[in-house]
Amino acid sequence: MEPAVLWGRFVEEFATQRSNTCSGPAAERLRIAWTSGAARTQFYGGCLLPRVAASLGLKISYEAGKIDWTFSSEHPAKEVVAIESENVGGGIVSEEIPALCRSRAPLKVLITCQKWTQPPVECQTLLPKWEQGVARELGEDRSVVFGLIVGEMDPWDGSSGELKFHWHTLWPGAAKRNDEPTRSVVYRLHLPEPTGCPPGSVSS
Image (cartoon, rainbow, N blue to C red; front, side):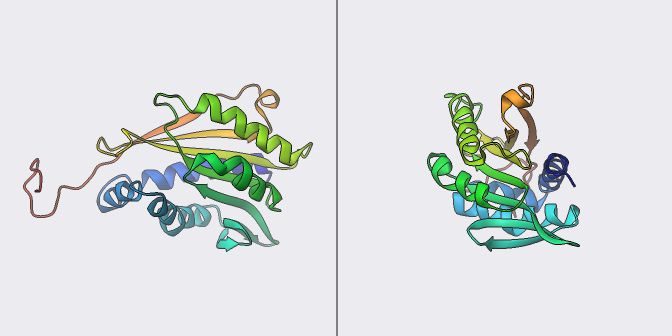
């Protein structure tokens, strides 16, 4: 499968599997996962990404080399997706982007979280910086695709139950993809009532 096609499938399955965690007990688990970087990464690796890999017919591996997760095909046996999750944006250009670009996988996916569309609008400054970082690492290599997924809870503490994900293609760059617009999806978490409390009440 061509990496651009695989990226489209990855985004589709990521959105589908994420949607499946937006109601019932899974929604509360998702909200809790958003309370810390470690919990968020554990949620991706322990719940969400294994489902994405299975839906794509691929095998997931953890911490393969210096990459958080890889998806591999069995016939032939090779890495096809490399994934990094980073909760702090400051080190992405110097650490996560080079690590992903060194991977042999033709599709490289960076998952991070930022206040992307909330003031200050970080996407306006970070997105060009990250695109430039990927371009420096990959040079003229047109055989790979570098995808970005940015998660954002609005408001950030998760009290509203509104979770947004934004998708970007960092490579090939914007000029080579006709300034592809940001694609976003909004999930509204249907959180369960606290155990032992009548509907609409608040536990103390």
